[in-house]
Image 1 (cartoon, rainbow, N blue to C red):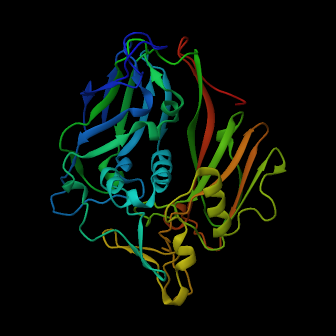
Image 2: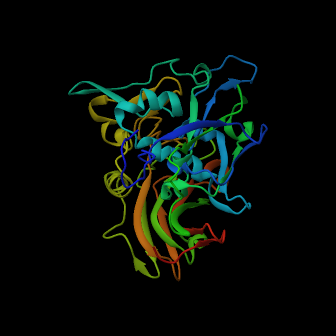
Image 3: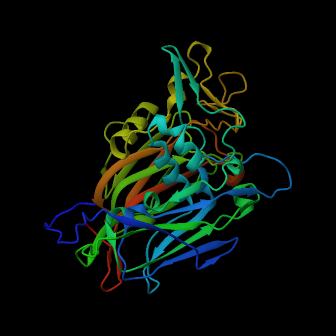
Length: 411
């Protein structure tokens, strides 16, 4: 603690002292868990996390538990933050959980990907070693870091999921946090928690520390959407989900087909994307028509990512097959092929292939998304058609005095 009188008063606090309290859930079931932070005591918004829990495999066998690119976050079907009166302020749901958390975990530094982050978040390995100038290997080791062997060390970083918490510093008006769990049929395995998760809250000790000044706070929430491709390998659609909203970053990825069990974001051969807003073409030249452009846009607008598109450049060079994950049985390669040249229907391409376009503008009349690949699409979209997922950062505002939440037309 700081000492001596100063601008913070005679208490000698620097404003950063805090006490971590573990809150038990108000209610907990196999479907959801609810936490409530009572108003009146300020806490640090960016330090909320759920911790002190582990997983147990109840499928009746000794199979190890490994997750996809979203790691332990893929257990979550929906997470929402409400005010004390019950108004939903911000949420992340559906493809938004797998898509956004998968991408945010890719942005962790390589050194953390295979150590502390790999064990806490349990995402599929995104880290590589370079034993020599001409060789790369995946840091993932077979039978290592099985989720059920992690004890009660797993945790969720709530601030990394909800941008409202990132927009706030100190909250003193209380919150209700609701987390809904995915059904076992959706996740692909039966599981249970070794004990209910606890909510770790860092309460401020400085008596002079108050909640953030100002009644209204702006942030960007994630609005997901998706389209199913049927019969044709290209489409041009108006995205009605985003009318009269202000969009910052616009993310997209191909989720493949029913046989993409882990729902990995992938890249199809000959993939091309164009965006048009109110009749004006957003992307220059031919749009995003190569892996190099796609990776460059993502790194420029969303932040540098680890391993993304890696195999697009290494696969097939000097007979190298790229990287292989022994625990998931996946090659981090661009295509699985029958004869080395012809893509098969299950060409999953286990490459983390996210696309991102910075828009920073309000959507007035319409926004049109054009997408095409060289992959044939069947008439049964669920089985032999691709699913293209969209995730948009949409401007939103919350007034803590009135409790009103609204979309804003400009930031």
